[in-house]
Image 1: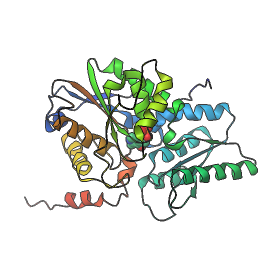
Image 2: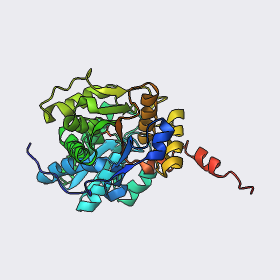
Image 3: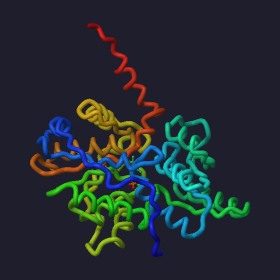
Image 4: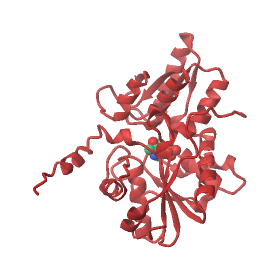
Amino acid sequence: MGCSPVSLGTFPTPVEPAPRLAAALGLGPEDLWIKRDDLTGPGGGGNKIRKLEWTVGAALAEGADTLVTTGAPQSNHARLTAAAAARLGLSAVLVLRGAPGTSRSGNLALDGLFGARLAWAGDVDRAGLDAAAAEVCGRLRAGGARPALIPFGGSGVPGARGYVRCGEELDEQVPRLRTVVVALGSGGTMAGLVAALGTDAVLGVDVGALADPAAAVVEFAAPLTTQQVTAEGLRVRRDQVGAGYATLTGPASEALRLAARAEGLVLDPVYTGRALAGLRAAVADGDIRPGERTVFVHTGGLPGLFGHPDAVAFAEEGATAFEG
Ligand SMILES: *Cc1c(COP(=O)(O)O)cnc(C)c1O
């Protein structure tokens, strides 16, 4: 389908130096740059805005009046789908895994604030979540609405186009770029970057959202580039998943502290914390070296820090009394 995107965000997003964080990671002061895709614009910002420009563009072209999507209770994608709907005068129904009252993610507060309706799917796998979303679409249609289903994480070939554009921005903003480090969830973000910059230039840090994330990246990237994209050719780290997607791992917790104290930069427990921990591990094992230019993509996710059960530990650290 030849579709055009709808404008939701403010682009290009800035690229900022991070000399103190670079030093803390064992890199030179000019080696590390942050692509501020947490500053894409509406709804609290984040990477999902770039993908939604394309997926919602397609929904509008089909005449949709209601956006339906799926995710975990802490889903940034669900929150930003709700924001996009509000921004464009559409309705949103979010089909979420789990049961009401079991998560306190800041994203859920924003979902409610944006006026989205929630449909809880129970403790289901991906297929169960997709089935619940299909049922919600059927009920909406029966009630006279025109729903459009936005895929899990907004990822697919259309959504990945949003990250081709991010890759093009980086090409202009950062000369002699060697590696772009990004969290790998549903795959569309890494796929677009790979299509724009090549497999060698992108290091994806898996967060544990999919059983086979490399396959998803290949599926979404291949149609967008003339280069060969194979799962074996991708740079993917799977050493940061820990006890699973929603948990705050030890290395991610250290990464959050590091970025916050070195640069005043706030990362999130699920995605960007893991991505920086993966960058740190890549420096430690020589995959990323001093003297090479590295970009860390800050993909957003801040609302997921608020209400995260493990984040109270930071509050307790902060409560250290000043003793003069
Ligand atoms: C969804 C998300 C990602 C991962 O993007 P995918 O395209 O799903 O791989 C990274 N960071 C944040 C904050 C996200 O919400």
